[in-house]
Length: 202
Image (cartoon, rainbow, N blue to C red; front, side, top):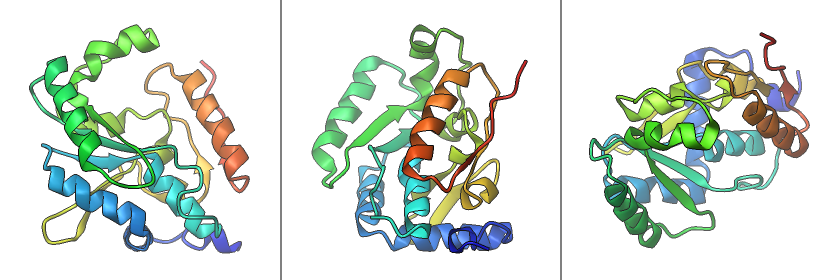
């Protein structure tokens, strides 16, 4: 088996432990987790690219932040006003210090702008992890947060097998084929070890 696939067939418990260890070994990412905890937003999670990109980088011996465009920080606040979210975004902009920008978004507001942006309705969410459940790629559906005791909580509704197996697997909950294929094309160029599964017809 190729070295980069060494966790591909491991148990869920081993994969989760490997994920935490890989993240803990990345100083810039750990700094961001600590700063996110300090920001103390309700129901917050760091999600998606900063996590899975770093795992692939670690397993293929690439630089830590290779391919990482930004860090996505989800939170959930029942105040769905634009002004409240904007205040959090501005506070975060002055709070985070690191080589990669942090993009902060209130998941309670997604349904208010999603249709205008993507052309289809989006049901109101009830918690931040609902946003992860809606990702167009099952492989990308992972979130982590650093608890008060410095342990990590991991949310991975589809497991971590695709992540450690270097497989991009679509999640056709809604018609987001274009988004999936654009993301897959970019990531396949950066990590040629990836296997991309096609969006299902029909």
